[in-house]
Image 1 (cartoon, rainbow, N blue to C red):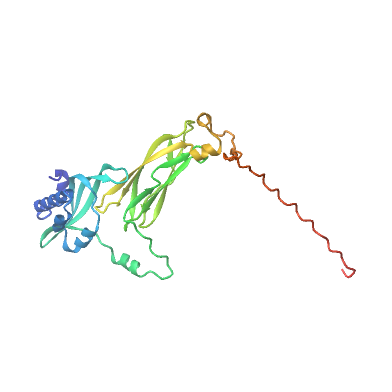
Image 2 (cartoon, helix red, strand yellow):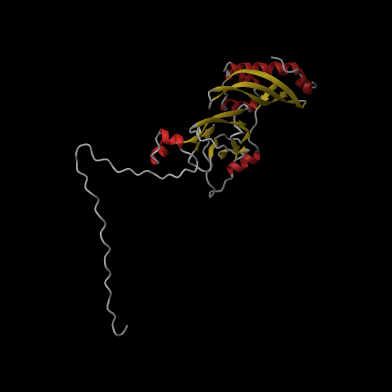
Length: 301
């Protein structure tokens, strides 16, 4: 594949330009074929352990986006992959940024590593500090569906983004129906091992129950390849759960007619007698309070 001409102008002074493009193409073709061992030859020796340990996402195609010169021996390469989103089981085009460096053996991919400051903080924790949180190696958005209950006067629902990666991630965009909802919890960077809350509030006055919408959360840095993740969350609003219907004695017709602000109270049903004919004894009434006995006072008192 050839890189766009306009973007290549930024890297016109790079040495061995054609060789760099050729190696980038061979590297990504091998990843596309899921031949990670063969792709290792295009990674600099200092980065090969990190390359072996990191997870490579599944993607069905890739395309070059451009090369930007950072120095005579360093270039920022941009590509875009059509990656499988594990949360929604659908494909989504994600940008990927990588650094390639020129050495004695030509151009090779360079992977970032922990800084000395981060390593120092990692190995110099005080004993009284809380232990590091266990990382799962993945991003999760829970619950997998967002429910806004009709009987909840706040009309609010929330999901939580859990960052189980070793690096921080950035929530770059949140998509939702802006005619019906407002975003109440804005999220930016989510540190490694932390979670962030994303809340939306329903603005409408529809009386229909169990209506549907969707929420999409876009996260960058969630891919070991430098790309991102997209979470597609179903939204169920004006929701009347089976538990709420049973608690307030709402059948289908009554639930459909229920309006906001209607007075109602929980329905308490008498227990049904056993079907085997066993007699149910009435509850034992509580014992009457004991009478206190006054102690006669003496003359001394």
